[in-house]
Length: 259
Image 1 (tube, rainbow, N blue to C red):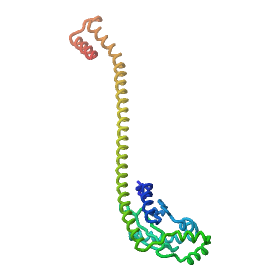
Image 2: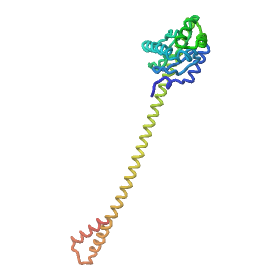
Image 3: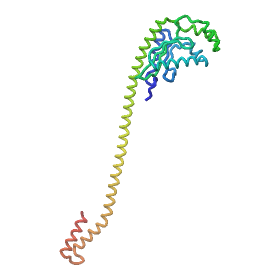
């Protein structure tokens, strides 16, 4: 059984719950698979990352480098990290552990803790070849929150990630039990099939044995009938008298033939 995150958690129900969190906090939330970093759930993801950074070859290199550094930290010490990516955005990252396996990362953000320096982002637009106005508009859409408030949101989701891990572990055990039950049922079915095959072979052997005995009985009965008839004729002494010894032998032959 595969232990990847999407096999152990109902992604649709989880997405519905995360939407409630995201809409309440006003901050984007996503879950990425580990180690593939495939986006499994994305709620209220901002246009800045989706349409600009992740959609630009050079800018996306910063995203990938930031992700790799973060994942290395999470592998060594799986806990909540609040960090700034190489493109200047702040986000929280929380490992999701299922039965001691690091299977996914829950991301919250991006956000700013202060009003962003638009001039520095205009320089980014020039470096990456972004159309400046829609890029700056996307920067302005990023929520601004206090460090303490963001930490509180992240800690709440950290506790939720533990719940997800426990739920995934329970589903893993359930799937294992179901798998073992299916295997046991299959073994029983295979045994029944083999037993049926053996029974059919025994029946065929029994039929063949009876046929053999019947054929042999017929083959033996034909010469025996002649011997019995001949012994009866001798016993009636049509061909002359028999002495006592001869009479005894003829009767013995007749008796043996009848049995």
